[in-house]
Length: 343
Image (cartoon, rainbow, N blue to C red; front, side, top):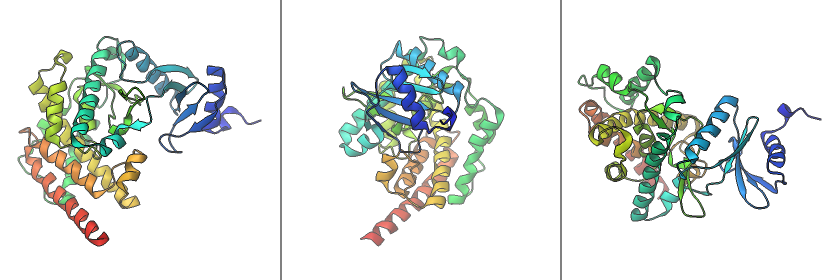
């Protein structure tokens, strides 16, 4: 008989689910693809999501986060229990936001964007009613992280043009090195939200949750290269949904969001370029279906568009706007060439 650690992840999860829920698992599917750590378990009366992560402590911390937030918010899954390294949570739906947003008309896209951003602010508000803002790990709070995050702008030079002498790196380091006071989900890409049978949008995957400024979650959503909305429209959405009880005045919040999002856009560009060199360009449908990095020239152009817009909103990052615009034109040329070849 195989030892538990030699069993496949799926076999371990099915065994644990049978004991935990007291019923057989009729079927198992992998919502994020076979290589992901989460599985959808089809029980007799419902479906649940089971996650087997390699880090025992992180699994239990995520379960604690869901439990505490769930006392004050319905914008996330319900934790259904933990068995060893396996966490069970409610199934928030098969209609992932990254796919749904691409299939609806612009007015409906704005509505979904408003739901997503409002849910983030409600989750942050829920955290402030718990002890999470005191106990969660601080994210990006060391010197090396800040330096690497800001200095990644040098990557833009390879996409056309040097970095302006007017860009003040020291000031950028200081601005990004912000006190960690607010719970953040982290990784708020649109593939980590879904619409349930009740038509409610919920965020999931709180594995990397911690503490930071708070605007980072909004930045992850707007800085998702597969997110189709124009950056200026997203600013309007954020302003409408803004929660003044977060403790940060709206102008300051938007300024930090703009600065942080500028460097976040560079990180996404680096990832896209790295993956494109390794795998070539991928189809947009495949990227959305598997919640993959946006390895498509249109998505690369979109994140450049986002970087250009938000860098231009702050004097600190405005010297980088020209770099994003040059990079954007380069990716748009690739799109045009691709379309010409396929015509």
